[in-house]
Length: 416
Image 1 (cartoon, helix red, strand yellow):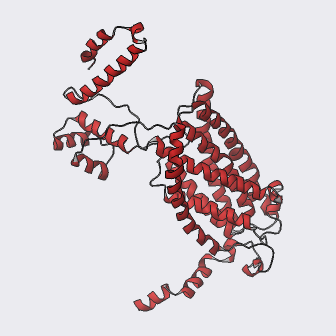
Image 2 (cartoon, one colour):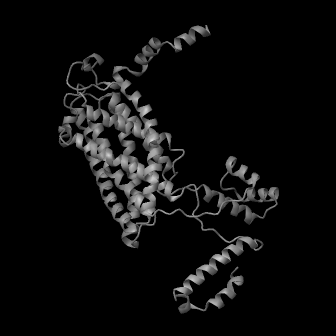
Image 3 (cartoon, helix red, strand yellow):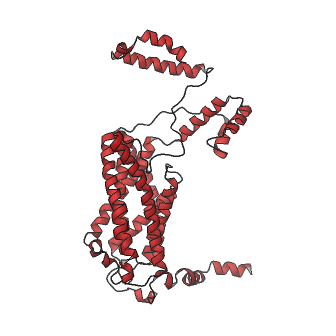
């Protein structure tokens, strides 16, 4: 019995029959009255999208990951040094096996009771335990070079994708008249350029989803994961249902602002404040116009309202529009964060941080605090650093205008 079941599971013909019976039912993918044989376009000009074409996106995703690895090390890292990206030097946590085990297996931020218990196990004070965990968290915090490399990789892809997508769509009638997205649907051949536009975009988002666990975790981490999953389902389903024309518009709208955001991040990590602020303002304008005006007013309107003039709604109609509405909810969430940053920029004169997706939520930004009274070696190092800074100030004739260096040095033990 078990042998017969195993033979059925690994029988290609049986698997294909099961897929045809459950997954590829015509009512899921095609309007009422349309059959698969009706959209068979062999011999016609163009290529009709087939579900098996999406298999190529999986090896393409691994190719993107390999290309990213090479790009970050051969291009992004040297370029970050050229722009002046600097990494903050952090104090490494001392090697304490019990604390390390608790950090990796239990919690990165222990509660007060856990701190007391760990202090008893290790023979350390509560302050030392808290300081160790703060150093350990900061030790795992991604540096500016890593964040710059991620942003530069996404910038390159989004810029290339937007340029290539705009070039392939500039002469397409549905870019200017959205009714053309549905004229003749679903018997619409797909040009080679639009086929590759689809395959490359889906392969790239698959690679982002695969790397989400090792990339920098940001404040909107959950929203980013939902966005990637919704985008992959949107691209895959729209390709199988031959919603390619409107799908290319969705991808073009998203790519139009994403490369601006990534470029602003790059200059932010490099310390180019004015350039970063200018790019962010441009990004904010493009994002708000494309995601809150163009996307719902043109793209969602044409899929939700205009398409009903050409065919009766079916499962694919509802599923596709549901995915578009999920994206629109995410757009509203990010627009709220962006408007908060714009408010700070206008009324406070600066952008403190990227509230949309550049603020890590897992690590704290606390400055390194002085250790307890008994740690003479750490104090000696800090005292030497303070004395060197005071000497540098005196050399520049700044300290003499404020106070006497000898008096300050005499007060250092009290400050301690």
